[in-house]
Image (tube, rainbow, N blue to C red; front, side):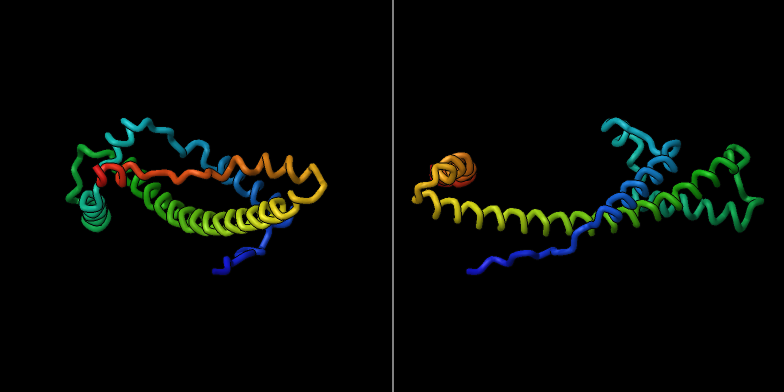
Length: 163
């Protein structure tokens, strides 16, 4: 079976890399006062607003906007509105970043695959050339050989089934 090679031959130019890094720096600077570092415990504690509860918040916001006479005097409505607007903007930013992240991860996967296939080709060539009188290929083969195990790794679940 033939392996597909060079799945991604689109590469970033030095100018594009500089633009990406500058843009990421600008984004980090723009969000420096907004981003929060939460511990895993805090994420569990505060991150439990389910989709149902978000719909509830949206409905309360609709009432606050469309029927302001029904608003509770116990709520700081300016802060509520600021939180609501920030949340909405950040949801949009997250969606855009996730889409971009998925695309970048996919591109990296293809480059990783291309590198690995080329490295396998180089290793095969090294094995072929090992029989020649050039000792450099033998040293290279010895160094690269460590990445290939001769014994089959046994899956723990497989051994449990055999018992």
